[in-house]
Length: 276
Image (cartoon, rainbow, N blue to C red; front, side, top):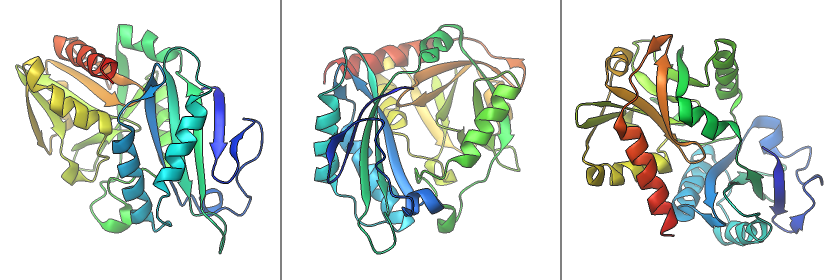
């Protein structure tokens, strides 16, 4: 993604090439920072309030200073004023700042990665990789922090194996989530997705699909499921703010059927975004 606009608390809009984070910022030195990434449809951020709620919750779990919500909303307005036509990506970052100093708040506006629509057309390939079930508070269940090295390493391993997505499973082969996505699958008229009680991220798009599923004719069940349940399903897909609904056509080299639910939910999601 290329950076289109950048704004920071205390400075407002700055040139995207300007340095804005101190070298001793705790977010840089220790990864103690929270962030949110959301899709902007034609200049309108989708469910910004829900993302700010989650940012505040993540920051509290990490032990960061309280999020300056109004300040980040003001930064959002500034960067959106530089948005081109079409869809973009908004990222909000909140760090602890330097020791004894003020926290850092950033808003970054970027373009949509070009590969997303290409992969959506043919369907994504995934591999399952061992992940950690965040079952205790110090593993930060449901927190979206900038400590993303493990996720990025998993994505690199997926690419090494010729896939676009990595799906984390625990030692018992229970499905958790993707590196930046939630996972879903369909059997008949029922959609299945891992429960938040497994310590996975409460995706904003995940919550939106839970709302949209009944109007698309599907029931939804949330629980702990084995990877074999996904492989035996009629279809599978992932959800995230930027990638939206992404059909999966292969997991660990095993082909999956391409069904109607992913396309129907993608259409419903776009339809809801158009009403903003």
